[in-house]
Amino acid sequence: MDLDLTWLLWGLPIAFALGWVASRLDLRQWRIESRQTPKAYFRGLNHLLNEQQDQAIDAFIEAVQGDPDTAELHFALGNLFRRRGDYDRAVRVHEHLLGRADINRKDRDRAQHALALDFLKAGLLDRAEAALHKLEGSAFEGEALLALLAIYERSRDWRQAQAVAQRLEAAEQGSFTTRLAHYQCEEAELAQKNGDTALAQRLLGDAVQHAPQLPRGWMALSALKAQQGDAAGALAALKQLAQQAPQGLPLAAHALAELAQQTGRQGEVLVLLQAAHERGPSLDVTEALARLSPDAESARARYLNHLEREPSLVVATQWLAGETLSDPRAQKPVQSALEQASNPLKRYRCAACGFEARQHFWHCPGCQSWDSYPARRVEEL
Ligand SMILES: [Zn+2]
Image 1 (spheres, rainbow, N blue to C red):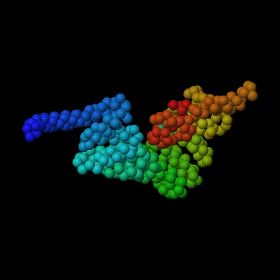
Image 2 (image 1 turned 30 degrees about the vertical axis):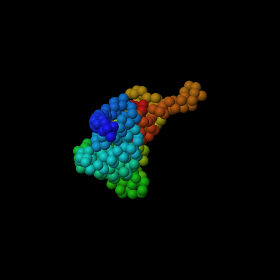
Image 3 (image 1 turned 60 degrees about the vertical axis):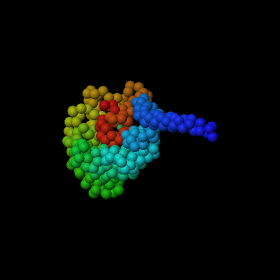
Image 4 (image 1 turned 45 degrees about the vertical axis):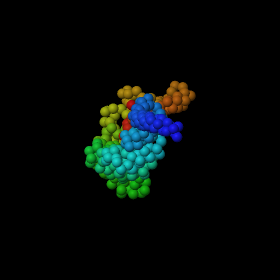
């Protein structure tokens, strides 16, 4: 009995001491954990600054686990997943944010915008479109409309693109007049392919009325009229181009020469092309002038005139084609060598991305810019 009592006397203070130590340990553990959240966050930031995205993601996951209520950490993590191309996880993070009841309106819109960007980057255009429409009336509306415009351009939905461009113009987000005219020209092309020339004509009429400074509308209208057998109407459209969009004249020079010959109005077209040539020589204008010349000798005089004003391998090659070399065996190989050397100089080059092509584009297939191809060839740039 005595022995049991002694144990009790010793046991009580020991149990008390052990309890106290355990509670202190818990408290220390809690303090360590609460300090770990910012530490992991800053570690993540540090990795980001060093462009170590994988390590940054690990650190942010740790931080989010330590503090699941912080919206900022979720945004940082979601954006990182998107940048890494891990769209599934980016979507999950942003959908988790949207599903939270405690999130404020501003963060909800931000999460909705981030989610739309995830879908866009993943190429899920339908889902991106739906997510962007939910941003109407939010602070992200302008950005959402621009992203919608990019989606409609990619899917070649020109009617929807026109509607969005009109809304952006009304919201004073910039001038979309030229872009609208491009959309109308694109839609007119489709209408023409489907045999609806009346719709094509109406759309092109709108395009040249709203953006007369855009050569494309005049050129498309001229081509449509020529296709309908109205050469005089086609020529009139290109004369309008020369007046209202003179920078695009080199693109229309060959069609102008062709229509002049068809209508027998070489004289007035020659005057028009000559005036353009006076303002600054252009390969295409010189070629059109040569084509309208009455004989081979005066055509070669046009080339020589161009060379006197501006050196050009392309024009020199054309001039040489009519020249007889003293050694007749040299004629063919010299001519073909010069043609081969000058062919790359006849390309068009996008001023935005440098993409080169044999044909002129209104919408760069490389970088999707509008009007980034000058009307002049590579040699003239
Ligand atoms: Zn480009």
